Each structure stands twice: as structure tokens, then as C-alpha cells.
Length: 223
Ligand code: AMP
Image (cartoon, rainbow, N blue to C red; front, side, top):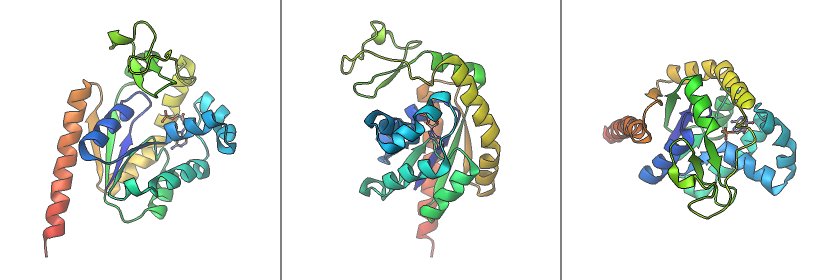
């Protein structure tokens, strides 16, 4: 099973991806996290992509494909995985289908307005210590600016500045159309309203996933 989360930055893909991982046991793969790790470690790839990421532009397809390919070949991905932030273009979707072709797919598009994204991302804080993500708009626990989980000082992601958030949203709108058409043609695309509470959004996602998985099981039992 391959679950693909589509939606602009700030739509909640990361949060929902983690909930899916916890509930269904499929690991969440965030290409943004994998690339940020390369930057942090100072690898050749990290050095190549750092500036592009800082500006909110997309990293070249062949570079992102490399990190995706490495990760989905890990043994914990055998039964399935959740992709958060990949594919972002039609070409990336086609490349993915080439390297891991006969997996059943469910694609969830989390819909949200630009205004809501601006508000959410302006409040996003990340922990450089343990990687936890918080939002100052809905978490009193982080008012001291420290991570409640590990105590490290929280920071703002360098691509969460308002002008970069706008640019990322613009790029999303510009590139998502062909991707949605592709998955809609494959009849694997489902839409979810992202402007509700985390629990409400996950409730919708769960009913879609449970329904699709039950159907698949039934189909596979048919003679
Ligand atoms: P994210 O954490 O998903 O918001 O990604 C952060 C940044 O990583 C993006 O703004 C891009 O620069 C880069 N990135 C992540 N995933 C991809 C992808 N599938 N294709 C191209 N660039 C990506």
C-alpha cells in the first residue's frame, strides 16, 4: 500500500502522516525531513540543495528521487508507506511509478486556503533537538520557547518566512494541477477538508483508508 498526501505546506500533511503511521503502521516518509537531514549532516547532496530549499523552490527531481528510492527500499516499507511531500510534480509521480510500480495507491488531497496556511506556518516552531513540530497558536506548553519533550530551544524553519511561504504556496498551485488529474484518472484520488481540527481531519482520512482497504481485501478474496 502506498498512501500519498498532497496539500500545500501547512495543510497538515506531516501531522496526519504521523497519525496514519501510528494507526496503520506504515512509516511516514517526508522528503522535506530527509533533505533537511542531508543539509544538517553537510553531505554533498545537502550542500547542493540547501540554497534551493531556503528559497522555497523545488529541488531537482533526480535528487529527490534518490532519497525516496533509498528510503522505500528499507525493510520497514515492504508492507507500505506514507509519502508526505512527494510527489510534487507529475514527473515525480511517473518516476515513482517506475521504481515501485505495482503497489496499490491511495492519494489524499488535503485542501486549505492560502490565508489559513499563512497563519499556521507563521506560528510553526520546530525543535532542532528531537525534531518535534509545534504551533504557538494552539500550544500553551511552548510559551517559554523550549521544547516540552527534550528542552531544546525552539526555532523557526528558515523557509517559514512570510515571503517564502507565499512562494511555496504559489509553486504548489502551479504544479499540482497535472498531478491531481493524473491521480483522478487512476481513480485513486480523495479530497479532505484540511480546515478542521486535527482529529476531524484524521477521522475523514481514516474512513477513506478503512473503506479502500476493506474493498481491496474483498477484491483479493474474489476468485
Ligand atoms: P517540506 O518540508 O515538504 O515543506 O519541504 C521543504 C522543502 O524541501 C521544499 O520547499 C523543497 O525545497 C524541498 N522538497 C521537499 N520535497 C520535495 C519534492 N518532492 N520535490 C522537490 N523539492 C522538495
